[in-house]
Structure formats: structure tokens, C-alpha cells
Length: 271
Image 1 (cartoon, rainbow, N blue to C red):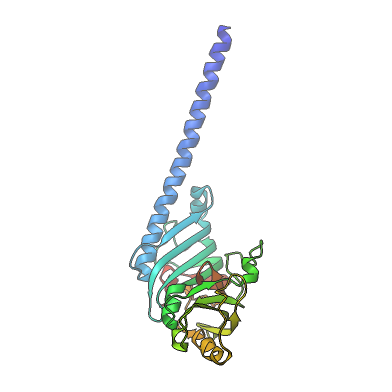
Image 2 (cartoon, rainbow, N blue to C red; image 1 turned 45 degrees about the vertical axis):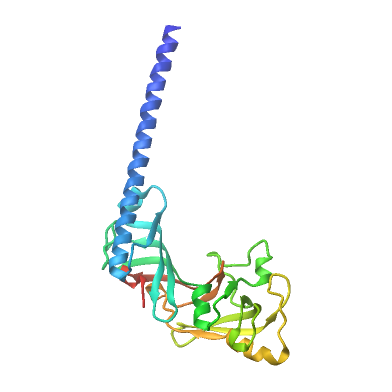
């Protein structure tokens, strides 16, 4: 009986010691990751000329092993409310896969070259700022209805809809209308560097999930013209060439994906 109690106490002591060690190691790893993210956010802010620290995440566990191997599995950077000369405000996002830290350090110096296996780069323009550019103050942007109603989402991995048939709803006052209507809009790119986003209204929508407001035939050309526009200066973070555009929530997203590129933190903001 006494031997069993002694053995039980020994096992409890060993378990407690191991648990404390594991918790300590996890805590140290977590703390190192938080510090690295903080320093990365500060460095992106200073290098890219942002007004405040962006949101940054270094993904993957354990962090210390990645830092020791000079390789981060995945890094995410997001900055909201960034000044833009054309639309006023945008948000910027980048997801970097396979970040090589050989010429930098685990704290990623602002000027250091960073080879990455794959870079996903995005500009986000919300409905409000697109509406102001168009002169439609109450504009709402939505994904194509066929994708909204599809349980699979019909979107890219990053949650972006296709570029065809987005639903733009608002009041086209310049066309002489005083009620909200819905219009189908296609997105495309123009220019040699594809930094001009072209919005082309293709027709009036009156089905479920729309404003269900008809438009007189003689007014349709003016309405379609009012919902059509071009948005220049859409340079993606790190200079990645745009490959797709669509909707996510009530925002228009421009995205570019490139493999085997080398970047630096200053390239996060291009305008």
C-alpha cells in the first residue's frame, strides 16, 4: 500500500514537471512569435510609409524551429484605411508562402530581400469608396447571385467571387431616378500593367436578391453608363500583377498570385 502511494506521488511529480516544461516551451515559442510579429508590423509600417502598424501574423508551429531554419511557412500582412490617390481609401493584403530568411533575419529587416515561394497580393475597395467615385452615394456591391446561392461559394481560395455578373445596387440620381436599382457589372483589367480596373454594367437586374426595381427602356443606357467606370492606379502590394477581380462581402477585391518572386517590405505599398 505504501509503495503504491510513493509510486503515485512520483508519477504525479514527473507529470507535473513535464507539463510545466511543455507549457514553458510553448509559452516561450508563443512569446517569440508575438515579438517577431510586432517587429515585422513596425518594419512594414516604416518601410511602406503607412500611418499605423498593419496586422501581421506569422503562421505555423513551432515558431522557433522556423526561425532557426531561416524559413517562415506563411506570413500574412493586412493594412486598412490606406490613403489612395484615386479612390480615397483602400485596404491592402498579402499572404506570403515559403519565406526565405537567409539574407534577412527572423525579425525581417525592412530593406532585406525576401525570396518567397508564392505571393498572394490584394487590394480591397469597399462599396462606399467605389460609390463616391461613381457618384452613387448608397452603392452596395455583392457577389453574383448564382454564387451567393451556391453552397460551395463559387469563389477562389481567398473568398473572392468570379469577375462576371457582380450585383451593384444604388440610386443613379444622375440618370433622373430616385429609387435604388440593381445592375449586373463585369470586372476586367486594362493597361499594359493591368493596374486599371474596368467596371462594365451589362444589364438591369430585377430578380430575387436585387432591388427588384424596373427601369424604363429609354433610361437604361444612361443607367448602365452611370454604373460603369474605370479605376486607375490599382498597383498590388509588392508589385504583383493582377490575375483576378471579384467581390468579397460588400467589397471589390483585386488579386494577384505569383510564384518564385523576391520582395522587400517597402514594396507592400505601391502608391
